[in-house]
Length: 227
Image 1 (cartoon, rainbow, N blue to C red):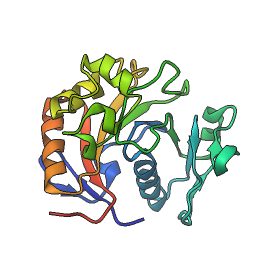
Image 2: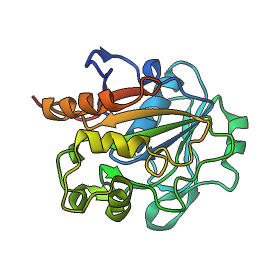
Image 3: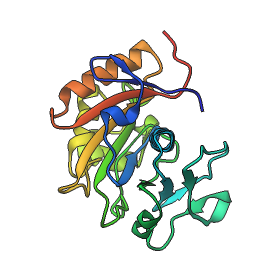
């Protein structure tokens, strides 16, 4: 994995994701456009700090192709298409580690989504939910860049042909029928991923400005940056 670039909403670069978003002992990742990369980044940082860390899912994920660092491992059961599914009682995995990081929904590789009725699948002991959104979807039509576009339209009261503005993206993040679904009294944070160019970073800054101050938010990119 390439070294990630992590920015605060004012575009100051920081070295570690966990410096901006302090993980809970059980942390769930929801949304689209970079959940797996974000989970791997946080897990790697924790492992490098000497913390035993497990990556898992309550839905389906592909196994990690690259070797994981010492103290970091991925746990799951074989599923169709070479994927892994979660174990029956994922909270029990916490007995084996310091931190348990869980991918809690799917997005079919699209940058933006809204949850279905059965999503996200959060465990009882999850203490932090991190919503991930891909900035490459901002400025483009809902029908083109969103997983479950009909749900996105319902949450935002928009049509499939309308484009996702930064303001609409922020609304999708904070609404309880959007990416904040099921959070309730848990901590909530936001990763705006795919900040690969100045255009995406500008969109991320605008989204972050619309979020409540109490929500920790960072911009990330796991690719080579462009100007």
